[in-house]
Structures are given as C-alpha cells and as structure tokens.
Length: 148
Image (cartoon, rainbow, N blue to C red; front, side, top):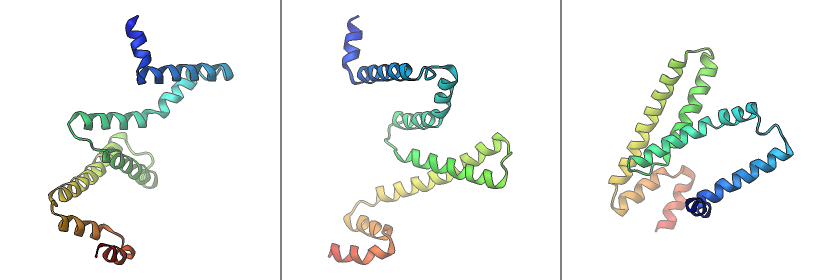
C-alpha cells in the first residue's frame, strides 16, 4: 500500500490519475467513449505515434539523443504514401515497406553525413562558413554585414 501512495505522488502517478479522472468524466458525458469500437479506433489512430515513440526509445537506448529520427521517419512515410497513391495504390505490402526502407536509408545517410560534417568542423571559421553556406541567398548579405 505504501508503494501506491509513493506512486501517486510521482509525476507518472499524477498523469495516470488525471487520465482516469478525464476518462471517467468523458464516459459520464458520452457513454459510447469506453465502448469496444471506440477503444479500437483510439488504438488504431495511435499506432503511428507509438511506432515513432519506439524508434526514439531505441535511439535513446543506443546511447545517443537523436531527435532527427522522427523527421526522417515522417518524411519517409509521407514520400512513400504519396508515391504509391500516385503510381500504384494496390501495391503489395512488401514493396511499400521496401520503398519506405530505401527512402529512410537514403535520408538517414544524408542526415548522418551532415552530422559528421558539422561535428568535424571544430574551429570557429569553418563552422561560421558552413552556417553561412546554409543560409538562404537573400539573407547572405545581411549575414556578412552583421558578422563584420
């Protein structure tokens, strides 16, 4: 019983208690909320977010804080869906996963190249030059004037 009191005082316990209270209120307002079809819809809608959360969790476990994973994953997913909707909406699941993996690998390699370039760029002049080259063309003159 002591662990329950300790858990309820932690931030996770407060979040769990808040979710239970909100679900109870919503269920009293709309009794369909806790029905099986609605719970299945909630699970189905949260699959993508859950997969991204698992990917970030694996990246954190491997020893690095890589927040670019979600951007690469979202772009790969979006590009694959757009590609197959326009080319072949009835393609096999294997080919969809294969194309998504290839797009993700290409984007991941590009991301890793950028990270390696900026990590090796240790002195101030190199870093400043790389940031200057990354600026849009219409801002480069402003960048030069402000750095002098």
